Image (cartoon, rainbow, N blue to C red; front, side, top):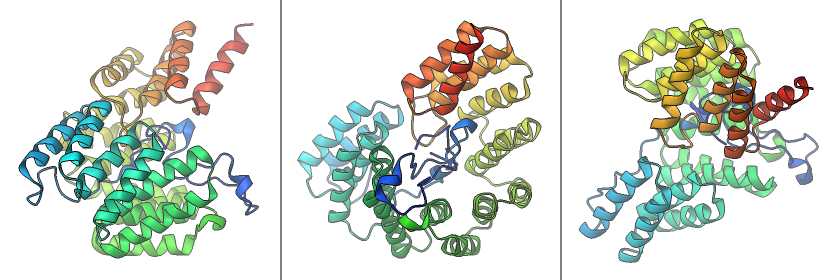
Length: 371
């Protein structure tokens, strides 16, 4: 469930959601990826990273001043990728205000970032116990359950994923991000854990009625993953570009789609459109590097973009992963004939994400060709 393999931009963290053997057996869950958004070899951005309306900022009016200050500090630490410090700060906030559902919510999200799913679940469930009608809390608990289900190959946690997404939508029908999570689960999970393409299609229609751009994105996912019609999906993604959305996230999904379809020229077009909206977004560097690597063009620039992305960003679940960036960098080095440098990047990617099949396959291929 990492961005970049997925996916990602959800956007992003693909689509590998719930690849479960269709026997209906819990033992057949080996290989399941419940919330990864994007095929591992594609290194796309997670579609599960659809922008979520946060329940409140860290400055909720109902929060005591001292606790609010701690939450603001935790937000800065979280955004900087300093998750251990954020956990310590959030635990202090909870000590000051044990009834703060918001503090538990962010504690769960922070544990999620470091893949400590057991502690993330405990915090997420506590946030809902304190604020049971909060749609976003339910949505994120669903995502956390997805991480647990993926890691442990758990049949029971897989079912909890859908239950929480459904609760999020019921509590707030206008939570489009939760609807998209639910759509993707329905499309990609087998029936044994609640997958249902008809229900997924119903979410597409509901999303379209609320947000036309999100509707095109949702229909694109349906056409690609549900109907297996890439040509129809491409039309939807081109409609997104034509709509010229004001936020960068829709463009990132379009870029990820074109990367998946092996269309670097179309990636470049979407990247430039995104740059008009958010020219300084660090993710553009990742995608520029990936597009050049895919096109086998201007490889020196591709190397610079990817190295800059690695140096300037923290590894986070809703952005292209550092493992993915290192795989692209390895591909750049391979194309340049720098085999040892390529192997080094693939090994680094596997250290970050041992489940990265693309990195492993490329590393194995290099090793075999050396003999």
